Length: 223
Image (cartoon, rainbow, N blue to C red; front, side):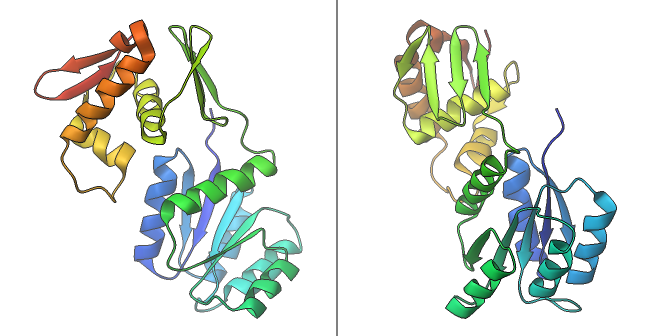
């Protein structure tokens, strides 16, 4: 299945990498531009970019100019990033057809959530439902059913089960699970995974046996 393509435009390479990494982890294809001129060129070259994350203050051509250029030809969703939280800037952004306005510094997780919400409204993201071994996982509704029965999971338990199912049959180390489910903002003990797996297994009943322990390494989801 073709991944949704997002253009990230920022003159700070560190900021581009941060946004890139979080989007890529959520299965988006990311293209980067370091200034406004490059962004406009890439947008018209690529044709199938489905969302733009655009910094305001940039050399050569600022975010406002980029937005004006693209809006003449396309209604692609645009998220503006800015170091300012000026109401006039925000109003100008909406007048130019910006879909969302996010002030720096921001949480990358919140940015990803905004991206998903905008794409859903634009009809780009379909409801993602996975069915495997009597488990139905609905990502868009954040629900899990086991043998037709809904089970209540915490946010982290849901993310953990989603990660296991997305990587079924693959041996996953605790470190890899931490990096992908707890992201970069977690610096605790890897044993927290064992605690969450234990709770997840108990809530899943017999289906909890699908989560196999690999001694000395981590876990594998196998039906």
